[in-house]
Image (cartoon, rainbow, N blue to C red; front, side, top):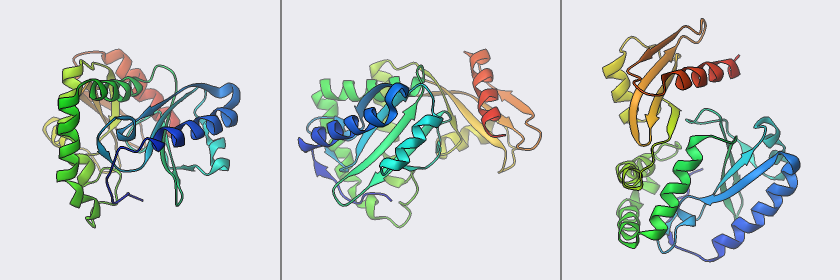
Length: 243
């Protein structure tokens, strides 16, 4: 489900977040490590979809699935390996829950973007204005995928902010959107649609690509100039989770 409205910042979003924090902490118990309010509802004085984004860090990803008993629907990793994504939808509450283990560089990116926007009012207004400009895309019939027209329309701006903020974390994501597919086409054109295909990032910049045959798990690496050993280990670990 994709929300089809934008509203100006609501102070009650923090109260909704705080209530979910208590529920999540109680449910996860010793598995809980830390939790953060992220996304647009964590940024002051902007328009946003009224959906609370939460980043939860746990010791064991599998144990986070007990949150299904609290109304959270597990949706897999989507485009980020080692990130479990849950959604919670009701008449008065919409939550996107991103669950990761300690050390996942995606968390740093979420927090850097949030904190930069809250401390730079001019860029914050530009972001809010961009959202309003694209508001009609929320009602597009092609807007039902999690990487939809509205989300992708913000990509260039978000990337520019992460550059300004100095984010340089090494991230690995499944090939998902047009920029990643363009890079793949230039790098390795002989892939099959059912191959396991990942893009490597340093901060917001693409720095490499890897491909593995789903049956044989034969791996090909391309263009990785930094952090190759770690990326290889991460990709191989991800392949192990698919057995």
